Length: 279
Image (cartoon, rainbow, N blue to C red):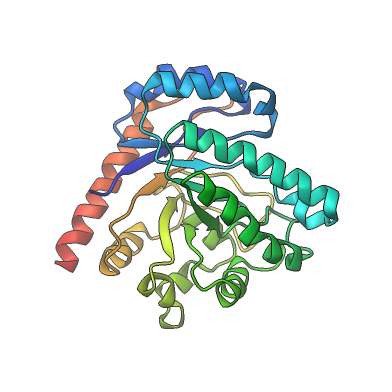
């Protein structure tokens, strides 16, 4: 059964101090099926405490999003930087295994600097995959925004590593005006060969590569056509899960639970409609 998953990043962020303990208050109020836990770089000195906290909650956490800046070390290059990236990713993998995750998401590049030497990122992929697999995790590479374009990176990764697995993010794709590539026949290998094992569902309200407008919007708060998206994904036969990452808190850190639950309800309506259309 497909699960509607909420990213913990939708609940905790800078305005509420990234206080992971707030999850105990917020999560039981949400009408979703589970959570994708996202690791922050400021938490490395609290890993053991956070892990104990998460396991004590009994939350269903099938996916972990590794800390986003790990591969910036790879982009900078050099053995010392590579060792640091591996050290940090190892911490993320151990944490993911401990909290019961099955998949781990990685930003193999991360924004404006991390694909400036993509040959480094390309070479590092099998190292990270092997590390993830040692912890019983499936590694998923996200189509993260970058200076070049994420789809060309995916294609190059696929050519080198034909069994690679991805997570497709709607906002990240639309930022580069690449959402329509998901529907294009020349990219049908993505779903025909089962390379996309997860979807991040976020709306986007900005323009092409609009670096000043990267806010993660909830479903139907931007300009993405989600009716088309869910219908197409259903048509491909995808039966996996969807993580919703749209920000649920305001500038004071207060979380609007009702808005998040309304989003999950709309997502289920889209999925139901897609099932009827494709049935």
